[in-house]
Length: 122
Image 1 (cartoon, helix red, strand yellow):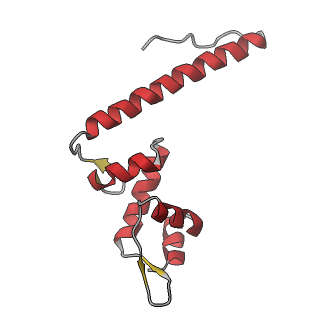
Image 2: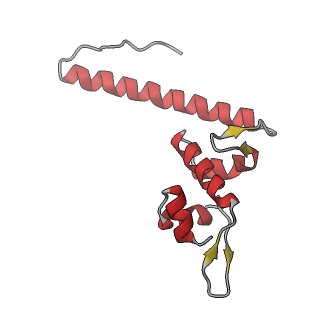
């Protein structure tokens, strides 16, 4: 299928599909006319990439774990070192949440607003 069809089927812009290709997330063959041609598996790959991006993963990390991803949901097989990698990502996300909660409390205090949910220690 051509890039326009993949874009229509996935709801992802052609520009973003080209970016995914540049990042090594999506493979395309080039026809004699220079057009990108994607196999049927590209639809599932794009859906997986979108789901992983929605989970907050970077394209760099997605490129590394994509071989371990199965299905549209997607489900992740715990390939070698993957549990550790995802564990680090989870810990980094928790740290960002803690930082944002601290920022929110500070901003709320400047406005004289009470803290609606005191932070719990992790």
